[in-house]
Length: 264
Image (cartoon, one colour):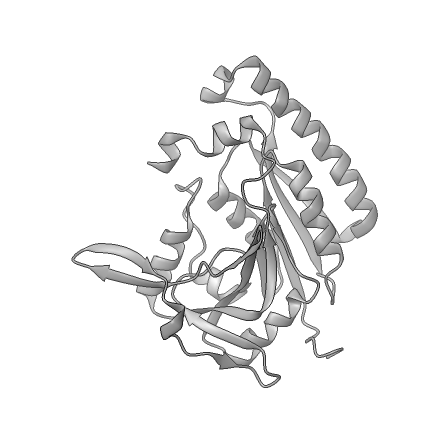
């Protein structure tokens, strides 16, 4: 242990789609983590050619897709220089979705602990410290962060409730107990946490993600784990990640990612 941070071997999986600028900021934050990750695995959903309905995209939006892909190559060139052999970029089918991307990234990792984040999450330098919660609590499968979204600090965790056949996430942090690790790191237990988290490998081996969900795959993931009844989840109060949420995104990203059919 150095500076109170446990020296554990972990990987970081980053899922990205048409947001090269955010990926650049995300990788910069990862490069400042201590201790550094064993491996950085980027799952990029921008492989060409574009098939299916996306061939009908307006030509101007299609041009934006190609510009983003070109910009990605500059980002990768820069961070291959910084991470060297520790970074791996995997390009998968265009717009494969979050669930498939996370699963591909997890399966590529061999570490016992794996950060799973999107490209708009910027981890704090002390993020690896939360491994302490997993090491001291063998029944916790994943630990997430409080998120700085603009000027606000938000907690997007909650408990899953089944009321007359309808499932909802109840966020009532005031009624929750605060636990501490031996070093004083505070955390709260929840059924549902954001997927910007450090997961225990064994938890993801029990259940990862259903590729049916291109977006909003969190409810299925946590509801399934609640039904399995094996793992608990937590959010730490002492590490805050930045969520660069829905700012500076190109129209083509908004058009493809938040389509009605996906939300439905």
